[in-house]
Image (cartoon, rainbow, N blue to C red):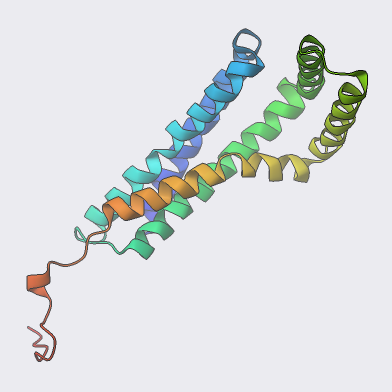
Amino acid sequence: MKKTVLTFGVISGVVASVLVLVHTAFHDQIGFDKGVVVGYTGIVLSLLLVFFGVRSYRENVGGGQISFVRALSVGLLITLISCVFYVITWEIVYYNLMPDYLDKYTTYIVEQLRASGASQQVIDAKVQELSGMKAWLDNPLGLAAIGFIEPFPIGLIISLISAAILRKRRPASDQPLAGEPVVSS
């Protein structure tokens, strides 16, 4: 299991990291509105490797068979490895390539609120909320926690779906009938 999980986890993590870096390079052109869609699309693309990892495990290690629980555990381990890559990449991006990210985001949100006609009290409350978030993100452990929370739920869903689709038990003809003695060959 180790080889399959590590192989697909690392590939998924590298894909996630590359997509984060590409997204970062074009962030100003993409903007905040489309950035969320592009970012989560990248997360989904990188975590599609969970499905292929579970299938590879089933075919190469399980001899064409895998239980739901085993498939789920393989998928979650691949997801965890991918999430570690994602978090490390975001730590590098946030602190080195985009240290002003939250300041730009706060400016964007204030402009959106003003354009929608929000009161100054609402704007001030949102700015206060975002400054609290900045304090959280300026702590590497806080940034790691938030970075982990982004891709993990998607990986969990993909792992559950993959386990449900790919589970395959021994054909019923290979299993003894109830009350029939088990003969080992």
